[in-house]
Image (cartoon, rainbow, N blue to C red):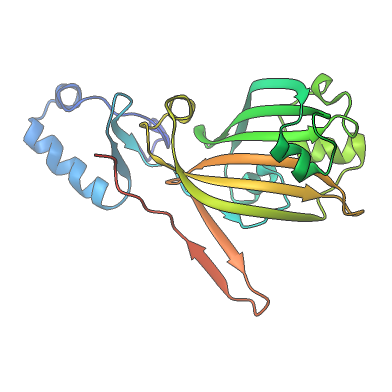
Length: 236
């Protein structure tokens, strides 16, 4: 079923009882088949209400301080991509947003929250905030593709420099529901400020990546590459 494509990354298998009946074998025989697949990393077990046995999805590799949009990054890595817009808003900037974007307090900002998929499986929840005076009609544009490509074509905004802060946080109930994981599972939180060639900030973003689906890489000036894997224990 895996080799034929009937089961895809992220697919949830049935219960042991259902699979034993489907393949007409005992549950002991079924477990003896599932165990080596789990040990090989083909399957993964998830706990909680949304838990079960799943086909493990491929890990997405992302550079720290990435300047490419996620769709382009996924395409380069051989992944498919899809985006679902969760919410949009135009409102006064918070203190953190006004500081990051170098705009007056309570200046209007455009906020877009989206759920991003890789290979059909939820990968991240992204929140992007822009100064309204730079992207006045952004919410009237199609938002399901690459925002960076849209910003380049329509507003001439290209990320020439990005600063990122990376930390590990726990998934809230709402974030867990969006990403299809158990509550309190580790997420990789990336806070980003993107600047155009003139040096002015144009994006303040807060992205939450599933820690089991992304690998960060960073290159030093000497060409050394560091691969960082985030591992956290399951909540008790």
